[in-house]
Image 1 (cartoon, one colour):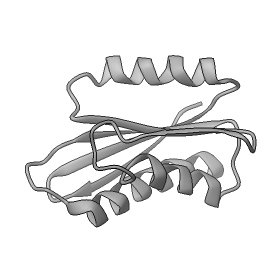
Image 2 (cartoon, helix red, strand yellow):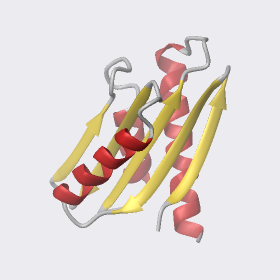
Image 3 (cartoon, helix red, strand yellow):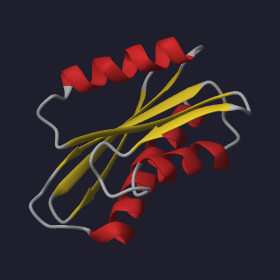
Image 4 (cartoon, one colour):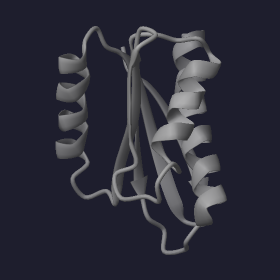
Length: 119
């Protein structure tokens, strides 16, 4: 099951997808699938957590720490494990700044994760 979330700010759209994964190989395969499906997006950022010691984040061209880390914090704030969250950004023409990006990626991830938990 894939839960979907969205966040919009100044023309940019952030589409979030949260889904369970059982291994790093599965997470990497799903990330590759999202990159192919959303090849026209400006950025495809993600974070996943597999147990206490395995986690990865990717900012995919956004300023360092503004995308993957906020997504991972959203996962960790809910105490989730074996989860992947991918956030796809379509740029709206206005720069959001580092603070705006961190809010956008966090809120998009939060929306998808909240829907995953409640469904």
